[in-house]
Image (cartoon, rainbow, N blue to C red):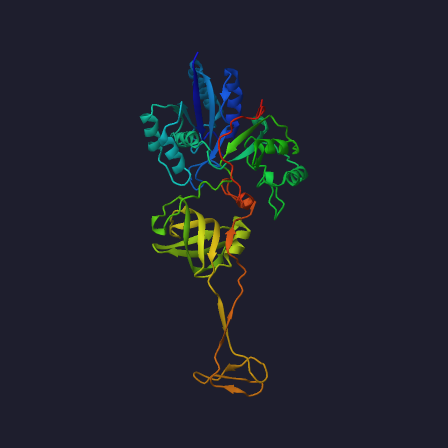
Length: 444
């Protein structure tokens, strides 16, 4: 009797009107138990480049990794394919499900692809060529875009930093009803768990962040540093809707994994997730809609930057930037349009060095202490209070204290992306694949 290691990747099994790739993965994990699989890891939730326009919501793909009797693989593939066809919402043009199966060790080019999909756009044809070169079993619907995420989820084995999320689901039939997550229970849970969790409440507004707003099956998702932390936290959250099922996922959320490539201005391309280091060349200003606009430049060029209204307090920080400040921008690249050129959508920024801001003012009268006025070009200054004239008097320079300091500035948690590394995780790193899983990490 032989056994085989299987990596099963899936993506785009959802749509804005309902359904969810992680919910599908939770159902599939339950079904796989009948094959007596040996789980090698928690389900991996891999968030991809958040700037890609061809996505439904969070641009997340899932990989399930397990060992199973070799003769069961064909049956598992047939079952998974049939489940996908029955689950997806057909007729929505942006939903293009994909499934990929890798047996044994994933090919190196899947790791390369996984790295690329975190910050670049990837054509469907590239995914198809990889599948063909490696003779990988797969299934897709629509244009096959889900194959990109499926391959990437398999290739990203989360060997570096990672976090965990406890996802509670309602039944599909209940998706039109209010979730009814009790805010007080979330506040109490978050206070009790402290820095074992992250990004579950916005500290500025008190907004509960664990419950999505859409019609998907997720009731809530609790993000934290360890699987047993998020499991403990979930025991304290109350909701009107009952949990139909739940699952723990290991994920790259909160790691900043998409922002690891420093790019020169001249090399920026649409939809990149990129880190740009440069100097501020135009003072920030707020425009209609509450968006903040400014420009930065490096030795290769200049580009406009935007911090949009939902970024909240980050806009106030940006308005305190001044020309010649040295900054590092964490950004997505917005393509040019008829009313603007290529633009950086700034997710956060770090102030490296601040320029000195100087205010020039008329000198003070040495006799009476009043502020003097100009006596005319080349004639110095005169005091209208006491009549003193100072032909050699000059304007005084005063350094202005800036409201900004060197350091990292991020939007509040309510405006952060799934991949954004929050300030509470700045010094935290979880590494390595778990050698043993919790006894209960999904239900049913």
